[in-house]
Length: 283
Image 1 (cartoon, rainbow, N blue to C red):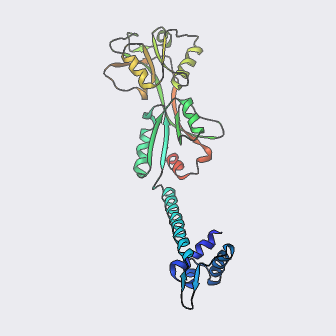
Image 2 (image 1 turned 90 degrees about the horizontal axis):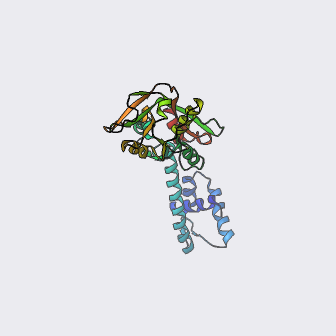
């Protein structure tokens, strides 16, 4: 059974005749007659009782008409869904970010322009987010390193300086300005390996021949901030990610000029999707 045969049958049944049905689906009357006759001959059944002025459905024809009606309703619903999605009137965009602060201005612009799109933000460190992106679990990843491999499309979102921060009640540095050599002598609260902040801090220490020995490693930015507030050590963060908190003081780092960059990354193979390209255009 071919789709065109079933569509021709449905048109004849719905509009009460071969000529009228053919007109409604933009086919010739002979073509519609051929489709219906072939359908009947293939299965050895009769779908219509043909009269001089009208046609009438047989019992099996009435049952088939119900099924054909459902099929064409589903086709119409699918067309409407695709039209809405193509026009960004429907859809779901999932973004993975190490820190949501970097993506919020962009999301605000996107939401203003495309209010019908559902937005979700999930968290994770840079390495985990790239893995999720490759597995198609998220549509975009916000990470600290430009992804230069051929399968990725990267757009720069921001650049920020680094700073240290400490509890006001446990000021290990005893100052508002510190160099890395002094910073590594303090007890430190650092993010887990896989975090861009941790990777860049370790790199800066290696370049200077410095080694931090008193480290508490904590997964997640919020958990690390709470550990610093509790007096477990000094934290390191990009200035854009430092949250105003009455319990904490920011400490400038005098000899670390490294920038924390944030990149919006997606799979290059998906940039032609309307919902993906719409966000890229706003960067």
